[in-house]
Length: 287
Length: 170
Image (cartoon, rainbow over all chains, first blue to last red; front, side):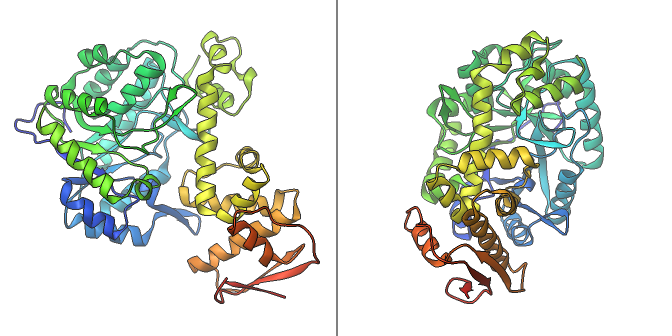
């Protein structure tokens, strides 16, 4: 996704691939313009090497004949000081080799330190050192995969200390330097606003919205008064309103994704997920 | 502070090493914060959820005994918890089968791991697992949501994939 405006970009609706069985996919696919697959969530280790589960890859292949596929990773750990995950890139290679992928994305974060998995994602400090490190890796990824590449804002439950850049300034600099785009998770913005007083209007005013290529909407849980990025519920009206506002202001948004944990899909049920996709499309159409 | 040092210190704080903050004012404030406590809680909760979904028998036993969260925390501290959802359950079972102080929990974890492998078709050989007591009433109690009674003589569970349970007792 380039930073240059693409006239007439149509904003589609998507949702998570994982968690649906064949019946659920049959219910959901007519309602979306694309599905978003997370390689890590459909991978298993086979003789010591991580691979995409054969059955899930076959299902994804079938889905790809009916709709567009985009990839959203969680395991790249693009911000780790000691290198990213080659294992994740191997999974991405498998998917890109098996189905046509419209764009791919990751989180602007790190999940490993010195090779050890943290069990969560942590935000990068907004410093020149972090910007240099991520920019170099984004450039390498864009050379390896000739696809639009987006980075997503995460919930900063444990915020970093102020650095050389604001949150929006860091994203602007990264996109300007590398040509990557932004996956703006508007629910994450709401979590940050609730948890640490993050100023969403000021952030959106500062962010170069032409870089935004995709939005995520979701809803999670609260623990001890703090909002967590869990993707287990239907989005709140305020989240859809914020998504509609960004779509109206950002010229290059190709998709708004209703993001769900695979574990949440059977709990919510296919009808609820389908209903939310209809509601999302109606809300965006009304914007 | 370099990025490497910052990430190492944050990882250590997340793992519960409060003195990792050093003299850094921001990290010192984080070390005792509710936010860090909730982040730790969410990491453990996520792992517990995965264990409950992927190995329900051992999760039920440990939950009924009030030991599930501590066991998952010990597991995560002892060895690296995989980033892949499907690997967490089997790895946790291997850990409990070796490291849990309760022989019943060790036997149950070994049995559940063998049954999962057999169901997945990754283990075609019969597996013999020594038990401190008959496993059948233990499983019946767990399925019914009851804490299993202790007692009885040792026996062996043989995981052979035969219906209805996938194992027999000798």
